[in-house]
Length: 93
Image 1: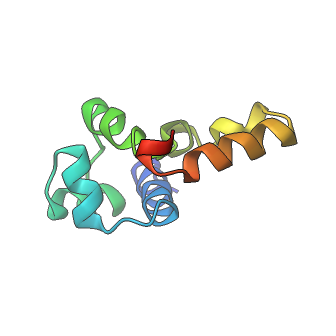
Image 2: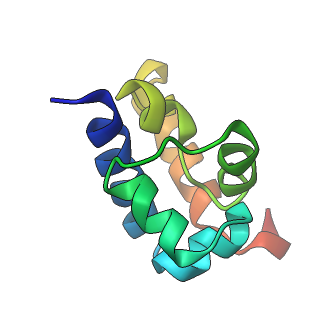
Image 3: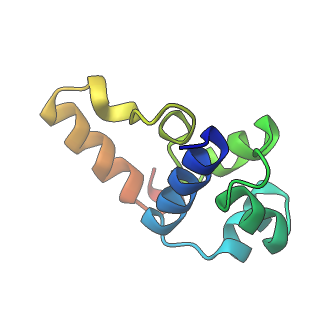
């Protein structure tokens, strides 16, 4: 499978995991819905700036780029704490 398509599919998976539309995640990342869609289709690579911005909303950029989740190297207890933290509203973190 093409690397752009793999990255795009993982980006879509992460967007859905955090419960955002293409428009919403695109706005967070500083791009429009069409650009967001092109990232997810594997037509374009997301920029570093975009990835750093969406990371702030709980998107696992390590997973997007490598296919390995940030939590892969954590113990089950550590992963659970990480997941709970990520599910908190911004003001509660």
